[in-house]
Image 1 (cartoon, rainbow, N blue to C red):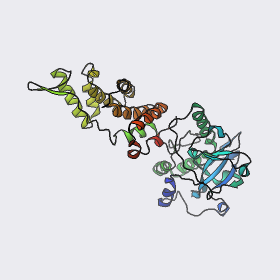
Image 2 (image 1 turned 180 degrees about the horizontal axis):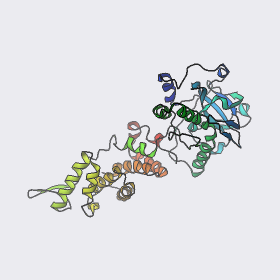
Image 3 (image 1 turned 135 degrees about the vertical axis):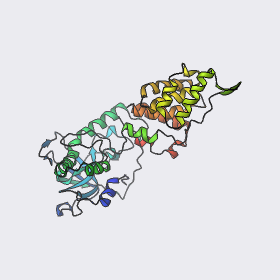
Length: 361
């Protein structure tokens, strides 16, 4: 099988010029190689002197390293689980009983760094030359699969705490937060932590606000729709609004197009019953989500979805996806994205990472 991963941290190690990383690797790490399977220690003392214990065995496969981390060596690993009934197409399924005695899955979605000092016993290795695996993230996860991932991520916090504590120790020694912040971005941590907090993470996923910022300007949904302008006397009228309301709406849309969403939202709010014109109503909904009023914006978008206007439905679904994601409704975001991809097969080509970037929960 072939492990296909994005490892931005590896490049960061090569490019980094600070003393935080050292290029010399201890000789005892020379026998640790990619694709090795290891059982980890159940008890260890982290870099801050805290004793951590795990009630369950942790078995991992090495996917990168070892590399030097200040005074320690670290590797990147993917945990192994024997709960194969929870697997998805993202997991690598191994049914060869000669490897570990039972079928198992490699949790590619739970990849993380650990210190090499946690490795206890080498159990074998995976032959990556005789088979291959193409990993594709599912559109929707079952409740059981989501709960399994939550449990696995929480359980393996015991392992990655070894690296987190090394960062915290370095932070205490140098008092230079900028270096730690820069480096933890490469590790895909949810936050920069100081001390011994065990974090819940989702590797290679965007936080809700980051997802929204990345996708809020759509590649193909630019809201260039018409909204019923008509000339009445010397005034431009937006049907079915009166001249005064039309003038406010025109100004609001101009503010929207200039990126002043706060002003646009304020102006839209001065016109009663905007739903009389669905295009205008959509502008007002997006203005609300762009000022982080997700609940109100989502309520309007869901109403527009029910109306299913063929001229607007793709725009509606797109902004529902990013609004759901920003509001912590990942399951709804996934379901809606699946609907949109059926209507717009080109979406995956334009934004190939929209699904991959979505958090699981």
